[in-house]
Amino acid sequence: MTRENLLIDGKRTPALSGQTAKVFNPATGDILADVADAGAEDIDSAVQRAHRAFTAGPWRNLNSRERTRLLLNLAQLIRENVEELANLETRNVGKPIREARDEVNLAADCFEYYAGAINKVGGQTIPVAAPGVSMTFREPIGVCGLILPWNFPIVIASWKIAPALAMANTVVVKPAEQTPLTVLRLGELALAAGIPAGVLNVVPGRGEVAGEALVKHPVVRKISFTGSTEVGRKVMKLAADDIKRVTLELGGKSANIIFADADFDKALPAAVSSVLGNAGQDCCARSRLLLEKPIYDEFVSRLAELFKQVRLGDPQNEDTEMGSLISQKQHERVLNYVESGKNEGASLVCGGEPPAGEEFKKGFFLKPTLFTDVHGEMCIAREEIFGPVLCAIPFETEDDAIAIANKSTYGLSGAIWTKDIERALRVARAIETGVISINSGHSVHLEAPFGGVKQSGVGRELGLAALDHYSELKSVFIAGC
Ligand code: NAD
Image 1 (cartoon, rainbow, N blue to C red):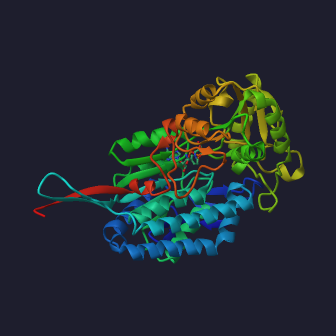
Image 2 (cartoon, rainbow, N blue to C red; image 1 turned 90 degrees about the horizontal axis):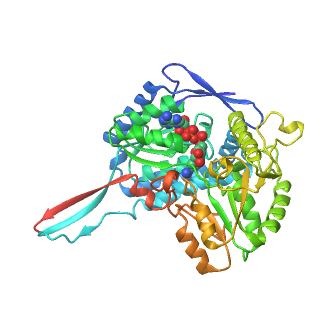
Image 3 (cartoon, protein in one colour; image 1 turned 120 degrees about the vertical axis):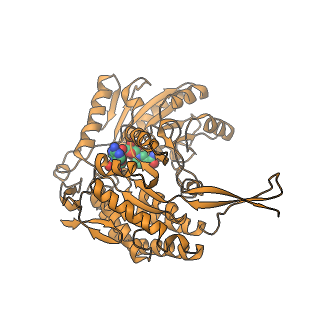
């Protein structure tokens, strides 16, 4: 067990209250670290240091090439430490080491992408009616508060930190209480990369204490939050008091729509990975499987076979395909949904229980779970389960598929499988969602905007679109030219 302190102004410091919280390996129950538990006073200290770094430090005045070089240095250091970071992520989140390694590399990709964007995005000159010229500048916003979930800690940290720093802001990052370890390490690597002290501060703590203090802090100008819709709603209300800029990436209940002419060899494995990746604890999980009636029985029976073959096990083992859920609380929550599905009349085709075996006893494992006979009113069809549970729902026509897919308060992700490209595009346009893929299980790409509609969120991360959310446009008019 290690002792981990906060990272404020380049120094690792205990919480002012002296409080700590234990962080666990969910696959084994082992205690990994005793982590300083930030209170409102620590948040204030971090915000004040971030503000000083913004207003008085060298950061904002670095030229574009210097800032690019520092972000590239950080990307390089992440790559040099992939194994250490991936191991830490695997032990802290319970996810398979192969997934963790990919995610750490994605974090490095993200810093490289935004490092490259710094000297390529600028303002405009605008031919206004008055005698003179108007031009726009992208100005940094100031101190940004970044609040993270536990499912993809280092990836989502990089999605927020990289564009925020690219636009010359300074940041205070609050990781989820369960998973602060890789984010703290990322903060240390940023210092080693030459990013000045105070620019990137990391303050683990509880949501209702440290998270709320960050959202309410008057010096913080922007909040970027990823987490549940319930907490996102609260964050939006709190941020309204002083009109903070807010971006929210929230929950999802995405549809995977398979038409009868789909290529089964591609659609089947994608239907597995897009709901079982990260043990289903993925906001983009395609947890509603919409199947055209003629293929319903065959698809379900082939899918059930694939679900049964998924290798559960020690997340540190290279062969493991699915690890543990994050916590006992999450395990219970998912099992409650399984019970609710059964009680509401859905048919449990496979899974729905923890795997047998000594190696699974101390962790929070759950077999891949498939329900059929699901209809739209059931809880399991409406609510985000955030676990390895898939609900198969039949549909008759294209319009029927669109109506079922849109009958959700969420709108984050989704997929469409068909060889008819006109239909694919028609359906993609009609689905109320932020991102969607055609004949692919992947719709999140570093270079393209990502985010939700309806109650899945506000604003976009990734791509150049994210930079709009970490900068203010200023118009300057010069008369007489
Ligand atoms: P959560 O909402 O419980 O917590 C998210 C973060 O908010 C944590 O850091 C937590 O400490 C903090 N928090 C909690 N209460 C707070 C408060 N009152 N004020 C400020 N901060 C507070 O979510 P979670 O359980 O960590 O993550 C699971 C949820 O996140 C799922 O609903 C999932 O869909 C969503 N998620 C969305 C995306 C996306 O990009 N759309 C990505 C990952 C996860």
